[in-house]
Image (cartoon, rainbow over all chains, first blue to last red):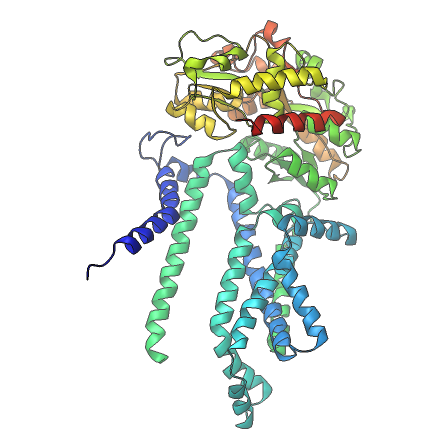
Length: 261
Length: 345
């Protein structure tokens, strides 16, 4: 039987749709032209100019600090929330808790941004990296809780009971049994939280204070009033970093694979 | 699990103070557009005043306004466009300037102040001007006339672009009819709507960013755009020319203001004063390619820049140009007309 070409064509088209814009961006980051309309020769001038933009690097640093701390905090809080939701799923309190966790996923970002800003102003908290951190934990927490909750639903409680029967204390059972089994869920949740925090614009714009401009805010402003090739160069660097991290983590995953059946 | 949580919180508590903004007394916070100050000049100001300058950026007047209105404080200098300055001032969001701290304001171009909204520089100082006019490709556009009627030229159909901006585009139509671009008269506005609808048939699109690329590559032949942007395109494609229509057009100005929530009042004044030092103003103008309205700074610009009609308008045409003012209650009427324009086929 002749295999149909359609699936191949559709896959190729979808992949092109995903990656062609990125390819164009990378190509233009080496274009000497400021406007990227016509190719004016290969050039590294935008990369060289990036070195002289301390504000962009400061913004990148802010973004990373917030993404890392917010991911860590929301992982801890989200996982504990998921555990509570899972263990006491039937109580009325946890049902309320569940809807409260769920709501931030559906609330429009702009509403969340402005309401958080008003709340911070009302309690007199000085806007800055700390308020961005709080805001990011607020929305990342919900994603973490739901991802971990999904993982917990497939979780076989009897394994934990067996560990306790065999003499493991609460702490040992959690550390040696619960955590390793939850790990894929935690990793996924952490990655989601990290990405969400990294590229959030709307909420961050509102809760950012003096001296805490993050990369997305900076990039938005540069599109309107600055140099687009610089953004292309910056994005290319970020892409290379992301691809390297992904490749490395896959390599690591593969080298460890034989240990787990 | 609890211990992990506690441990995590301890780590976080230890990490967080490190990422709070440094509470040093001498830090000036500027809230502005990206790349709006020459970095070397900012460094010089930091050195002269033994302070740090921290820049934060916004991407539209409206977003900045929403944020400050909701209560964000801590910004010492902000650079909104004039129409937004008057709205903010009307709401009491701006600080009166202390003229004793601003001796350099004597250098501000009095010709500009004649058309400015805050003529006495009571709460704002003009920072950067740009003119909105028509740019075109010299080699491809036959018998160009510096007039808004260019957009009626059927032979250029599909190769022309106007700004996707309610004020700029309806304003251009009002100007072409000889009305004020701040008109709130319904009859005038309806006439302007019909003009834009007529133009729209010849336009490729309404657009604010890509028109620069399109002009540089020759995709578009005639565009409605900002002189500052066009000068940047000119640096790359010398075939591009800019003209201010003879009916007059819009001059936009971003002003320097000190919001009421500012902390470093003295330093903020020092920064405003520094930017109007003639040498600084000239250097900044060359860097940003907009024009700092500083009459003693003009003399320090090189001759080709001084002779550029995109930057220094012919006085006769300049007299017909206007600054956008806040529309107040007429805003709703404008928005309705703009919606009709955008919806029309």
